[in-house]
Length: 318
Image (tube, rainbow, N blue to C red; front, side, top):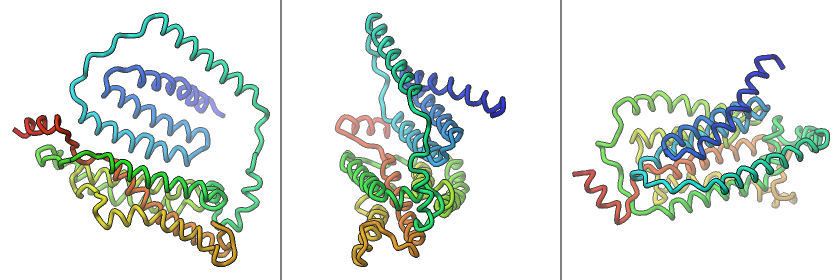
């Protein structure tokens, strides 16, 4: 590596722990959210430097973009800061510092005692790429060799979306007066077509390079959140047939493709080699829609009210 690469890696290695520490100890919520966003963006850069572009894309889209939007939205819900609890005693601070230092030393000892790095199952994966239907190893593992895990992950996402909707309290849409000026809707109209193109490119590129349904769905989910912030579309509701169809199309398509080989005398998720590429593309296309809808359902586009909050809302209106 060149001197610039060493300098960049050194800066990341120093700044990331500092940002994580400051985000945890800062008592001001807005400042803590900003530090978290900075930490997430630099984490994406670090993953890219480590040669993991798939993780970097998800970190930038979900870990920073989507989660950051949720945290910034939550800042508008919290009331005035309450009196901070008294700081811990010096003994507790010293005990915590010693514990963390011991854990750091133990982790360092484990890392330095690891055997020489091996290729693991890389050779096995590369040798079976031809019948897998895709040429990118990560996509082959996620959608073919280890399809069970991915199918369960999609089911977990669906259950999470249903759980979020079940926990919502009575809500009222934000007033027109709370809507941002004309800048945000104009910006959204310019960004949404580009985001759709980027999502489509990542979906299509996933069979040969970093990309796929999770990255494409994250981009589309971010676009949906922008539309909600600009009040361009109404908030999604589970009572809508379109929302239910978007949520179920991914798991239903994946489950159908997984079970279909049983009728041909094959095993579950055993794709016919001649159709493997087309089936994986169909599954990823359906999963992209479902992932985007799940992320949109997570975002609180309405103001949730409880009995105490109704009076506050009425006072805001008057």
